[in-house]
Length: 206
Image 1 (cartoon, one colour):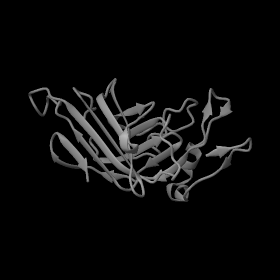
Image 2 (tube, helix red, strand yellow; image 1 turned 45 degrees about the vertical axis):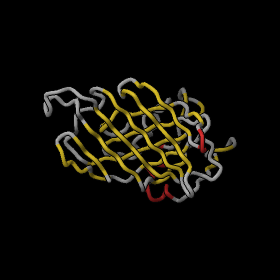
Image 3 (tube, helix red, strand yellow; image 1 turned 180 degrees about the vertical axis):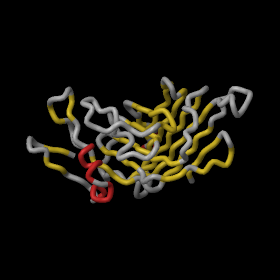
C-alpha cells in the first residue's frame, strides 16, 4: 500500500522481484490523469482451479444451453484482512504482464490479454454466518454469478461461478492462460499455465 505524500511502498512479500519491473510500473495509477491513486500490492496466485464450459456453442452442439465458468483459489491475505467494502475483480486471460490490472481510470495499467472469459466485477460482498462473505447477482455478459470468500485456518478461499446463455467468448486458439483476482488493493495473479481440453466444449485447469 502507499502511504503519505511521498508514496512510500509497503509490500508483504518480494513477489514484485519475481514478477518483473513491468508489473511494478503497472501498480501506480493516476486518476483523471492528475493525482496518484492508492498503490496496489501484488501476490502470486499458486493454488487455484479454473473451468470453462461452452454449452452455448452451436457449432459444437446443436442445442442451446448455459455456459459456465468457475474459479476457485486459496489467497494468502493478511491476518487482519477485512472484506467489508472491498471490490473484487476476476480476469481469465491469455498471458500478460498483469491481467486484471487493465482498465484503470487513468489508463496507466496495461490492457489485459485476450479474454478466455468476460471479466467479473463485484462491488461488495455481504457477511454471512461463519465468517463467510458472499454475493449473488446478475451481471451483464456473465449471467447469474455467485462469489464467496471464506476464511480458512491459514488462508482465505474464494469461489466464483457464473452461468448464462452465451456468456463465454469463443474459445481462443491458445490454451495458455493466466488468472488475476483483485480484492480491494491486493492483486493475486498466476504464472502462465495451459488449459486441458478433454471435450470440445470444456477446458479446465486442475
